[in-house]
Image 1 (spheres, helix red, strand yellow):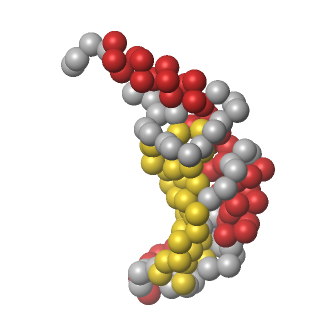
Image 2: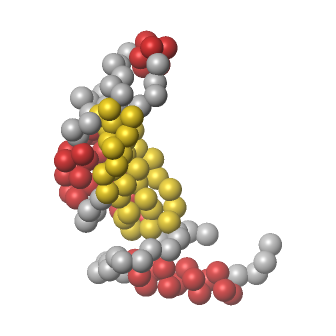
Length: 124
């Protein structure tokens, strides 16, 4: 099953959410939600990754059409990845239902098509 939307979660050092959203908007994201967070890494992780761990973090949640996910992930890696001052990581999770978004690029039609395919799919 393919999902029409993906949620990108990007966790960065505090103060880098504008850079996250700038990179994501460049490839079509419209907005995101910022959540204050606190890292739990220890000294062993600092030595292993050769980075300093700042406990104050921010998580940015961005729901995007699946077809632009990879472009945004690559932009985040370049702008706020582990080798930058933002020291960010990003991952995605599939989203099968979304309310409150209007996509002009056909994602709504893709969602309806997937729903119809699920109804007609043979059980495994």
